[in-house]
Length: 104
Length: 104
Image (cartoon, rainbow over all chains, first blue to last red; front, side, top):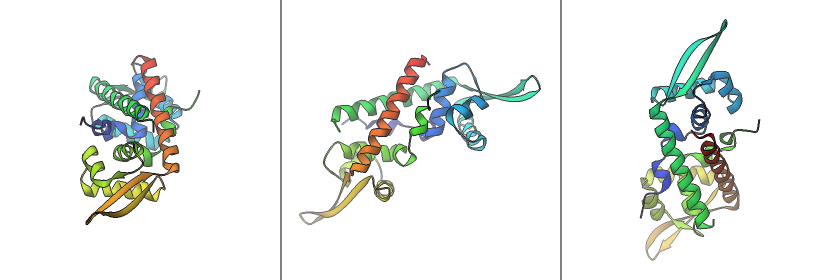
C-alpha cells in the first residue's frame, strides 16, 4: 500500500493560517503585511506569530522598510518555501483525488 | 474580493492526522482502529487522542466490541462529519486551483 497523502503533510506548512500566508505570498514577488492581514482576515498579532514560525523554518523572508514615512513589512517566499508549498499542494491534490475516487 | 480558501478551513478537521482519520474512515461504512493506525502510520496513543477530538466534535462515532475474543474499536464518520469533510475538501480544491491559476 502506498503512503496515505496526509503522511507527507508538514504541520509547519499545513496549519491553515500558514498555508494562507504561503499561498498568498507565493502569488507575487513579495507581499506587504497589511495586504496579508486583510486578505487572510487575521489580527496583526496572529499574523506576526505565524510569520515568525515560517521565517524560523526558512520558508519565508521578512524585509522591513519604509513606504514614505510609514514603516512597512514585506514577506516573500524563499526557494525552500516554494518547494515546501509545492509538496503540500501535491499532497492536497492527491488527498482530494483519493476522496473523489472513493465516492465518499 | 471573495474570502481566501483557507478562511473556511476548520482546525478540527484540517489538522493532518484528523484529516487522515476522516478521509480513511469516510471510505467505508466503518473502519477498525488497527487499520487506521497502519494506514496512517500513527502510534496508538496519537490515534486515540485525535479520535477523541473528532468524537467530541461529533464528527465520528466510536463503537467498541469484540472480534471473537479480541477487543476492537470501530470508527465511523457521522453525517455531521461527512458534511464537515466535504467542506474541507471543497476548500482544499479551491486552494489548489487558486495556486495553479496563480502560476506560482
